[in-house]
Image (cartoon, rainbow, N blue to C red; front, side, top):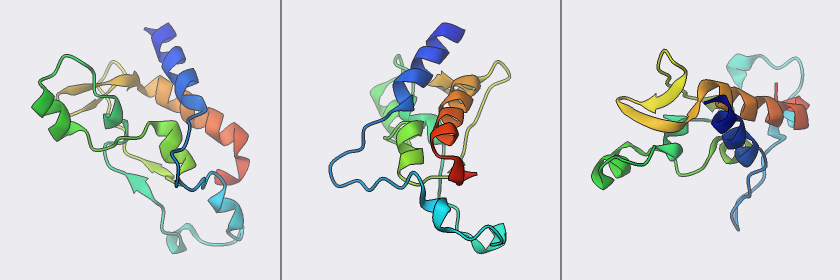
Length: 122
């Protein structure tokens, strides 16, 4: 429930980057405030929460459905600013019929924490 969601959000709030990864947490700070959004190439990920496909699916289904290997916090630190979050009416994130381990509320908490630490990224 909500406690699991909050734990997942806290766990992902301060992700570690891998060796060789560049921390792009503040790349938008370099943009001029008057730059139109239409002139910005906004990096994004497809099925952004699919890194957390829930256990219990056949291995082949997991491999075919997992579009991302990095959690949301890491994606944000790597410069992603467009997240493709697919949700069920109950708030559970999913990739089609496959459940992911995060809820929409948990994703919002991760994004909110990132934006509090990186206010230039709005």
